[in-house]
Image (cartoon, rainbow, N blue to C red; front, side, top):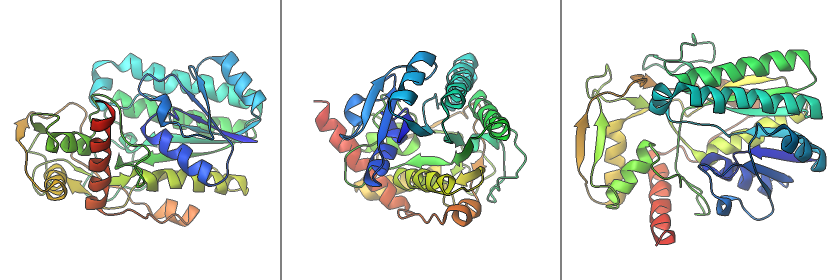
Length: 328
C-alpha cells in the first residue's frame, strides 16, 4: 500500500515526501512541474509527471501502486493572482480537486488529506480564530479551497473514505537539513522575498499597506515552519488509519507577527539591513489572521518543534543561499 502525494515536487509537498519516507511509507508523487522541481523529490519516492485531472493516469497510479491514501497539495496559491484570474483558481483548486476525488472514490482510496488554508476565514480580528469561526473568504483562492472542503465533507458522508482538511496559516522556512525549500521563481511569500532582498537578489522589498488596524499598522500573520506543518499531515494520516473521524483543523502556532516584525527578524538573522519601500494595500489581504491550534493538538497530539521566528528565518535564509549557488 502506498501514499500518493499530489504536488509532491513543490514547496510543501517535497517536505511531506521527506517526512513520509522517514516514517517508512511507500510514497508516490504526481506533479506537472509547473511550479515544482523533479530534483526536489527525494530518492525513494516514485515520480509521475502529469495532471491530477488526468483520470486515466490517476486510475493507473491508484491501481498499480495500491494507493491507500492521498495527500493533496497540488494547486495554485497566490491570493492577489486569484483576484486577477479567478477562473484559473476555480480550475486548478476546485474543478481538478473534484476530478481527483472522483477517481479516489472509484479506486477505493480510504483516506484523503487536503491542503486547505486560513484564507477560508477572510477578514478576522487579531484574536486567534477557531475552526467554527464564520467562513467568509475574501478571495477566489480562499473560496476555491473552501469548495473543496465542502466536497470532501459530502463525499465522506456518502462513501467509505475519511478525510482531514488542514487549514494552513503562513508556511515558511525550509528543511533543517537543507535538502529542500521554497524554490518557486517569483514566489510572493514574505519571508522568502525578505531573505532574497537581504542577499541582494532583489533591490528592495515592499510593505503593502501600513494603515491596517494592527499594533504597527502592517498585516499580522501566524507563521508556521514547513517541517512542523508536514509533520501534522503524517500525524493526520496515522489518526485516520487508526479509525479516527474525519476532521478539519487549523495548522498554525497560535500567535502572529507583523510584516515589520518579520522584516526585523530577517535583518537580525542576516546581520544587516536592506531597503524597504511603502506600497498600497493588495486586494484580498486581511489585516490579521492568527490560528487557535488547540483542536489539532488535541486530535493528533501534534506539538511543533520549530516554533521560533528566528529559526524559521534562518532555515529560509540558508535555503536561499543554497539556491543561489545551485542556479549559477
